[in-house]
Amino acid sequence: MAANNVLFYTLILCQLLHALNMKEPREKFLGGPVMRNKYLIGSIFLSAGITFGCLFIPPVAKALRLQMMPAIDWWLAFGFSVASLLIVRLLSGLFMRKSEN
Image 1 (cartoon, rainbow, N blue to C red):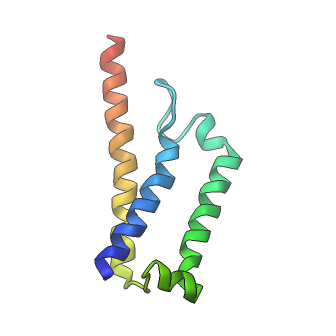
Image 2 (image 1 turned 90 degrees about the horizontal axis):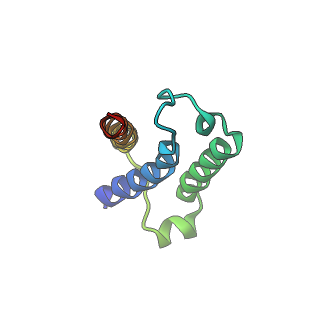
């Protein structure tokens, strides 16, 4: 059951962070209008808060079969989610540069 929770939260975090992959070819890695969009950043935090809050609402946690995970599982979920953001950003930067040449 713990693996399902890790996958569930990894998928959610990947989807939330994927919104940060919208960028122009010449934008810096953490710059640009997407990273300065307070509504986008706020909605990411709000969505993450609601999702993690589901752990503490017993009927919702039971329906989704969620249970508290050890710290290492949270680090795995967060680490792989951030890794997916970095991989997409790096690959899109490489492909955009190739297409410009």
